[in-house]
Length: 277
Length: 264
Image (cartoon, rainbow over all chains, first blue to last red; front, side):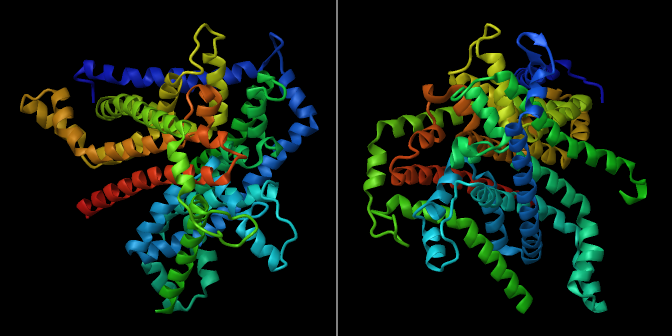
């Protein structure tokens, strides 16, 4: 429809200006600065990152933490979302509401809650020690990060997968029950294939969520966490040593890592034959 | 039925586990001593009183409220008309917005903070760092999707083109129709956006810490300042923050629920 009131279009200008100045421009600034070193155009920042075993280790542990907690998040969220979808009622809305809080429950509040529970003299640390299951439990370690990340990943997974469960209709269940198909076979042949697009989108979102997490890791492990986001924060705040251009290159590598799976999904889904979509 | 019961068991267990961190913080906020014992040795209101009397808390709470209200007001004022007008008159602009609002999901906050520091720390003659105004502007792109998604869903159910057509036949100009007919019909979506926006601002730490930090301490910054001290005070602070988020989230759930009820 042609704009009959061109003046109305002026109301979109403030948003466009703010998005340009506080979203697009900062991203371009990061990208451009990443290829400058000592005032001249250079790929030296990238070279330094690739050559540094310390930076490579951070990238690998960010990747590992994100993939692991994405898998944990999806494996736990999938059956929960399914049960919730079939259940309905007040418990359903209660869990969904709380998942929303939980998915946003990050940073200091979350890290601190886990320190209370699993810190040096935390209740669960004591219980596990008295049961003889662990000798000492270090919530400030990578294992601690996996535990804490899993918390918000599961919550986010429930939120994202719950609407997708509509694709598994009660008729499918009935048909499976009448034919006497075992549950695992139903999931393998029907459930997972039907949910595949939603599962892939959810996995991409959870992965990006974990990979980009800074506040929670910073609150829990401070500078001890060898993660890409923590390194970027360190290089910026200049507590130890400041090299913003190196931070820019790290940031670009991080964003490319997040965009690659999105692009891959896009290409893959547009290549599939039309009738399958 | 046993399948149902099993379902209730698993969902109940999941909910209990999800609530566990909140319970732990709650107990610690009122515990006299909880080190080396399974449960707190006793309960007290001292920590809560101490926190309420701390001028730093009052300042941080005031700052968070001010920032929450200010940043939300700007975001709503800027996003709502733009989204509605783009939906009604400029499909290409609408597609551009759709892309730009999801961008913060692919670009982590720490990366955006890096770029904002680059641009607004004086290197280009503009110093916004250290001022809460930078946060007010920088939160708009993060909040845009919180308005975009519910408002677009509400608009899709309205058939705006037909309403505009009908309005022009009756001699009502477009701006008036948007203001008097469309906006009231999407009011609920706008309110949901506003509440989520406020929650986002009072929860945000990365921008607040890296771009402004100690010059305008918010609740999240104050939590960071209190680290390492008495964990009880920090628990009180987190509990107050939880209460804020819980009230906001419950409001969203009630609104969204009544919206669904209306439709069915």
